[in-house]
Length: 296
Image (tube, rainbow, N blue to C red; front, top):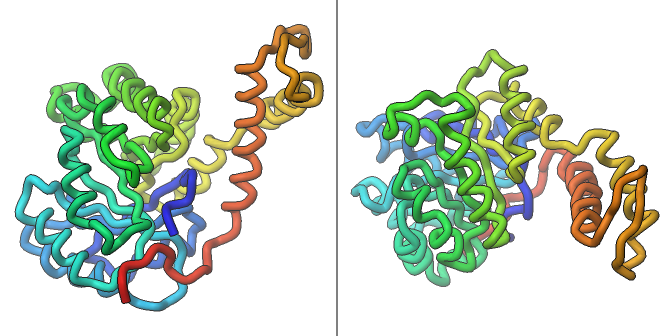
């Protein structure tokens, strides 16, 4: 099975720490994310790879899981892919970091071939070159399901802070490219683990830009992100009024609450209510067996 259409939260766990692999299910994150890249020191990458693929090949009940490999421009990344192809891992999505061109996604797609036919790919855009190529990257392969913004690496490359203003251009470019290609836009982690109010504010802002999810680095962040991405009661009530008045499929212009409403805003209202239904469907803790499969 491919990645759920919209994941609000991806809880990161370093792949070197198997004691935390079940944490995403326990805290209600929409997707667990085992990390082979930045969360693992170079000397431990081989062991982390073994642990992650062993877990992903097990039959234990668990929720949706994804894996971040290393860049294909590195030896570690190539070893990650070869090990994955030689495994019976079952996962929903594969994250490729530091993507700077469509060719990288196409190369990974070709390497996976028919071995993992339903595996979704997510491209992490975290360099200046990647931001400038994001429109082409977004259209690079049918199995690409989302774009992830990586703020930390981009801020380091640019020599700027992680604050809202320096990162706004990149966030906007990624959101627009995702909209054009019909992909999910997933935001960078918020690194202030104890600053839940700051996390809430940033999540609401990226939601307003069109982002549908966020990487989280601590279990306490999961509920905050879900709540911040949820339409407010006022938004839901307005959407219902719009559809009651103008959602008859006949098009044209209507007046709702003193505002002029045309077909584009009817589409927005439908999207708001669909988001509420999706949140309700995702609310229970995932207990199904690992979805997505390689060959047995």
